[in-house]
Length: 203
Image 1 (cartoon, one colour):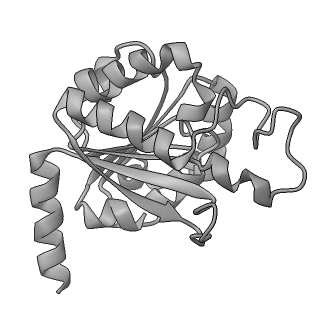
Image 2 (cartoon, rainbow, N blue to C red):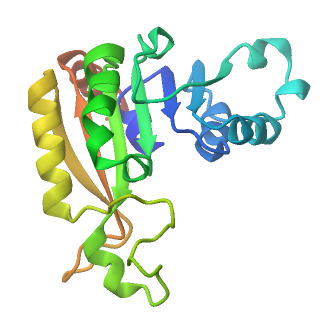
């Protein structure tokens, strides 16, 4: 939320929104004028709609929210034109062979001004006692990246599609294994200009 506010984003898409935890926070914050949740699972979208209590919202607020089913590995014109897109704990659920399709869909075809990606830090897993047999945090994870692997992927994706990227830790930054999760902020020149303007206002 702090990153999205710092970017000055008004129109935000939560890609792989699941049951709507982030959407609920976005809807509660007047900084965000248009909120879109996208997921491949109709069941998850139904839960998100109930969490947001869409049927009880006044018309004006309900018009701020859009939910729809889509796969992030196929082009969808409805994903275009956002100030920011969020992939929060999503990429690790994609088969590695399909990551290039996700990159194309998000960075080359949807082209949001900013993309915010979070994913577990595999190095931190030694701090958890009860992981799955594969050592992953969730049974549906197809992989989990170390900090170096995440940065290699992010730098390559940014360079290929005209973005710049920077990284932030999520949670306490363990001196040996780093933070529990990691965050990358991909920005176009337009997003960086909006972020600089927002920073100037806050000062």
